[in-house]
Length: 551
Image (tube, rainbow, N blue to C red; front, top):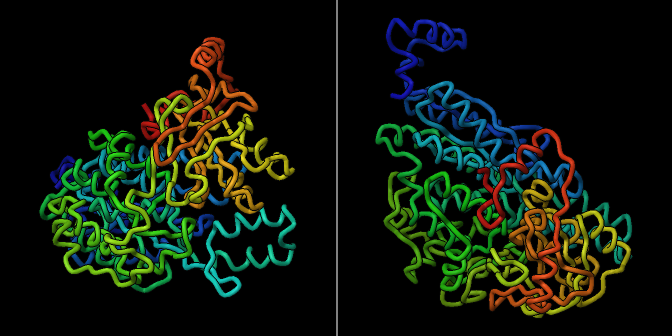
């Protein structure tokens, strides 16, 4: 065992003394030391239940002959961080989580890991750490929130976000807004739609790093506790067989995950996280690969915000494995990939039939023949941009309109609230990219305001920042190169015509080539005065097109 170098022999008597100081018995010290990485805290609704998950994991590890030892990982609630400087600190925590986990594991010689994340950046951050450390590892998330209930229907976080726009437009009053506040998020767990947290927890299953139900069993269900116990037991089997994350997260596994991503209609943030995780495995995933997979993968699910179904319904319909079973009917998955169950993908999904064709469309009757995410390129985004195609109104799949240019999210939000954005406009928000933000803020507030004010079928939004998984509409993010890196988005002027062609994967600034060249020659990107962690992050971060990973 890896920990033997810390535990055995007279020279390690000081180490053993410190293990005894922890209250460990000699029997416990002799067993494999399993780090349980807990993302529990009392500020993130998706993490407030993780203490119970961690306790169940510890029991499972101990039952299977290991010694569980808990240490923490930080977590930011993207919803609470939204719309102010806090959002600058969301994406940056992904790499901080990976780095700090690496430090804890290598400093203490753990033999295996059980990762217990739930919300947006913890899942990819811990997957990056798992790939980097490459010791037996399994994931078990905290599970999704149950949907809220308003006016006889289900509701989610995007509902309350858009309600603010409705309120500002005079469509609802204070009492109705208060009702949304009280009823939208009724339980602990990651927000109830196919937003970033649930997207990444589902894709953890697709990658083979989590057991069945990891992405979909609701946080408040007892089945979530059972899952955690099984994960604790399963990691000991991985130790016995010496199965490591890079044995599981192969290039084929990432292609499987991208395929499931397209079928589910996951958050656009998956296009940042999957490449960053793959990079830790020594695998390159570029945006062109994503488009190639999207072209042949049918979109089978329209979960909120794209539709009116929610995670609890996906779970009842058979979950991620049922979606994968549908995809296998068209031979879209590599069924030979190894998983944390010790079995292949094909063995795992055998017999996992779709239980609700209204939640998971049969592969023969998809919402669309192409996937839920599209990558757009063109004169405005030479290195690419990303849109959640499945959440775009039909009439906005192709759109041309005048640019309304803003240098930050706050200025755009003020203009939208003031009613100065008109049907047909293309809102451009720049200097919100990985370097320029820094931190690549999510533009949920502006996009929700547009939808809430009834402009979702006539106004587009383009940014070098990113979006919440709760965003819907013609919202194109990750525009690369970003403005701070000298990208063309930095030279767009008020009133310039912009053409969006999502089926054609095109994003064009409609000015002459000579005019664009002249503007680019004269362009000097703006710089912000930075300090602390953000200063270091901005100096090291790569393009959004390559996952906003640290160089």
